[in-house]
Picture: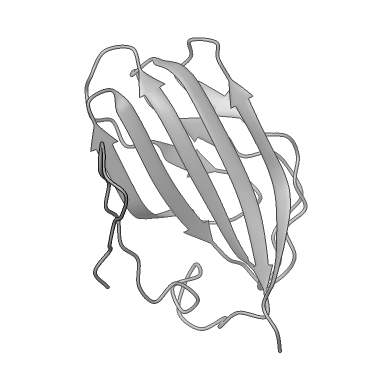
Amino acid sequence: MAIAATNLTAAYDGVDATSFVTASIAPAANALILLSLHATEAVQSSTTPTVTGCGLTWVAVTDRIQGGQHDFLFRAMGASPSTGALTISYGAATQTSCSWSVNEFTGVNVGGTNGSGAVVQSGVNSASSGTSLSVTL
């Protein structure tokens, strides 16, 4: 079976807050759901957010915290997810902005737990200047 990708929602919120709520989504059964986050923290504290919603368990795959800029990738998968919004919570740490994208992948390995069979490896790297970048897996 071929892997197919669908964007379920994406948005930006520029209002200071400690939590953010996405538009309602309807994840498919046994599809890998990836939530990509980018936030700017008001006071640097290296807070990792929690994600809840759609009857799924959200697991952090990668994180990159550099100064007040935070990038995270979460994964989830379930046999019977519910329709609804996701809540992204940073506890008591105020974010000056947050953007997100929720993407669904069907035709992936459904083994493991919460999408672990579909995300075998991940890597993160960054550069402030240059023309190339590599990531070791």
